[in-house]
Image (cartoon, one colour):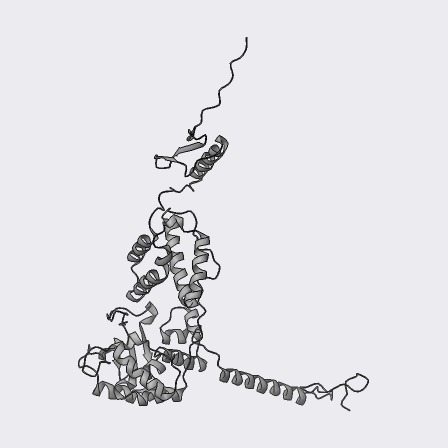
Length: 402
């Protein structure tokens, strides 16, 4: 008696059916129990089965991603991402500007799961042709951070931002003024703003820290100022009063003695009354505005002969460089500048041509000292070699000192 032919084992995961076109469609249940179709149809039944096997393996490992989860417009997702960060107002403003000007034109109307490494590479290459490398690096870091959150939200499996070093900024080293130029700036900018220049340079204070400095923050007896608040001004003109840039920003700065007279004179002549009175205010007694001060700053800078790209913030670079040149410990420099990382402080330790000449002169002095010491200690009368070797004689042998 002939045996009946064996039936193919019933599929335990998903199903494959043949369509009227002759192709095959695969359907499967997601981890959430919802039945889904494969994103494409297949030429052979075997291809459809391979797809189902891959989906089943992904679900078993916990790697399965709902293919519809990433169908959210990048512009909407990135805006929500910024809303949820709770960053400082200045950072929030920067993120939204980068998103509006550099990311949304390319990615804004794409689904998050449609952004591929190839699209990211093409976008970066195009941006580098249109704008500065520093802005592109900032934009890339923002894009990478948003897409990394999309990975955490199970919207995509991998972050498409995979360009090594693309988020690294290599900005040009900022200029540093001389001590004479700092005092020249203080002289020409006028008495009302003189102390701002001196504190910006010789106390390494940030502009936003100076804008919110209060009478009660100045200790005339100790010769120091306390930085407790900051008031950065956004591009919109809104003044945002809050904590300093970092926890390390809250600090006491001991002032050099030559600034003390200027501090007392400024408090007497220009500061608002009372412990909470602002130290720096406009000519009519109103809150200091960057636009108003900026005009006076540019006029004084040009008169002194500093380059056009020398910003008020570069006075801080100058002060930190002067402090570093004293040989102070790195930790002391970080505390004075209100920095929480060694990397941040190292930015301000410039190596100018003058520093290199001084370093070379110090090496020369030390080598000559050691050579002289070696010569005087050669009590046995052995040959003392000169710093520069003597030329060889006609036979190629070095000339020996007799």
